[in-house]
Image (cartoon, rainbow, N blue to C red):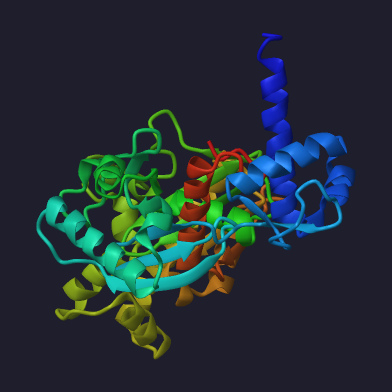
Length: 390
């Protein structure tokens, strides 16, 4: 064990120097020494290695690398990654630098295709077109990360049980498929869990250790943060709240979509409205009709919000979070005040929780999956040191 200690310490020191430059730079070598407590001689050697690896650069191209007066910068543009948020109605793409910053976005409608193979092939076409239109050389693409609905094994990159809103979305070797095409590391994660990470990195969960994110879109799902750790469960199915049941009738009527999802999702509300009004209506239109005084639409909205309140209360008793965040297109139409009142009827000083609507919305999933992709492709780079992502 002592034989490996020097190399272990050297790697640790190298990681420390790299992240100090990333987070606090530009800095001189002497400033890095003050921040790190590492000897100046060791820092000079580490800096040479990091420059050779193109992870940092000296602001003076002709600078003597042994000099300590020149400033060092993090080479965040030396390569980039492609992050994808795969939704039931839209697909959001973003190009991210090594600092986790998005510098280009693109959105397409989710493909209306019958097979998963056709779906994946079309994704590759759009991903390559997006990179080309952004004038980024393909050889500088260093990672791909995809947030997808369904139960995902982030280690193998397999979608174990997928979304009914996507074609044949089950037992798909998603990471392997894109690795074979692009020959770079690929990260796969559940979309709501990726959004949780995004909120932890850039949103309202930055200073929170226990929280729940509920995604209400075409489908319904949740992601949980407890005591600073992202919770995945025994088989990565933690947060699949769409399958909650609320009465004995539902208990004896299994549903492929889940009873909670049918009662409290955009697609569920649209299906209920279509059956009631005998015409196709979007979830947004149902909420608009309710606000205009339509009694039937108002009843649908009340049922929707009642189910959401029930689900939130069940989550509160189990998790005791500091904050619950709602995201998804439907949340823009919700009456947050009414929802809070319903929940507060059953909470105490110990279980009371702040309920908010995400200001980042879909950007949180894109940001989160980008951070997870960076974490896998560049393990030396540190993001959210105080949180446990895996």
